[in-house]
Image (cartoon, rainbow, N blue to C red):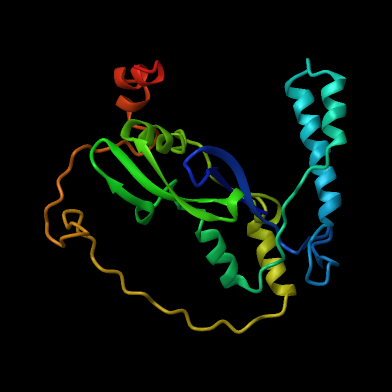
Length: 239
């Protein structure tokens, strides 16, 4: 499968979770392709997958926290856990379009920022508990940067991982073997999109070269003056 880490919610809160795409089949020990028997529905029964996930999660919890009592473990097993699974995609184009939303997306895009007056930032978000109702939130500038910086991954952290037939050690042999056994589909000619030259000095509002560089951020990690600076410590203390 392909697993993509997604850490934020609509309000920039910390909400780490994975978006996974699982192939509808796999290779046997003899290198033969075996498709799932779901007839175009789900790869695994959703209810059974929920219970397996619950058992695996509790098992890892007990390994990491040996002091966890039987009372908590029993309480966890009394609850029905929910695993959300979507139907398979209709084609490879849909897979690429779906993954594209999460692979290189940042915590908030420019079109969601409604207003910034130098002290506060107002942005739009969807409140899913209210039927995906669109609301607005106003945050003090330092709090907005703090929430945004929570989603900058540390150096060396891999955000996209591949497993099984798609892993780095297996795909060189597995992918050609699968392609030989699956029927070939006619691929439509890809449309080539012309990219315009990007000018960092061009203001998107007035369309004039009025932009200036205020600070150059490092490639990885939040800005140092925000994460460990005096202002950030004062903010954590409520000053």
